[in-house]
Amino acid sequence: MIKIAIFASGSGSNAERIVEYFSSNNEVEVCLILTNNPTAGVIERAQRLNVPTLIFNKKLFAKTGKIVEILQSQKIDWVILAGFLWLVPNNLTRAFENRMINIHPALLPKYGGKGMWGHHVHEAVVANQETETGITIHYVNEHYDEGKIIFQAKCEVTKNDTADDVAQKIHQLEYQYFPEVIHKEILSAK
Image (cartoon, rainbow, N blue to C red):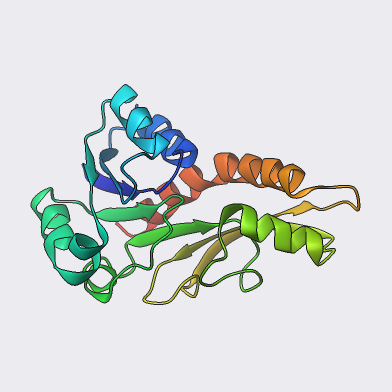
């Protein structure tokens, strides 16, 4: 069985889709959800889905090797970032090199980097009058949004679209593609 851990900072809608996608899979299992936010909606979702959770602080995450130790003790094979907002420390990216995947709500390299997440991205897309945007699924390295791109999907941005409209289109792409792309990457790495 291939074991996945998911990191999330917010509501956890992508994490929930991933758990549901693999719930009847005999090869891949979501074993742990980790969050840096003690009030994150992902905690309630994880409880409802019977997935153990771990809440951690900045010191534990960035200044110690404890998170890597926990993941290794749980025999985690892959790490998925699903709306996780902190830069991943080098010890974690090294421990899961080419086995850590993130989703970004834009077509990288556009609208990536520190501070470019969620609504900030959608507002920038609308402000710059882009005609298209989308999602990027990529491997994680020691820099925000600079890992090797695995997959991108596009959607149209119309003149009348608000940041909220763009967010809805992006969520649909995320829900449609993220679990499937994760699955394909895991299987191709076997």
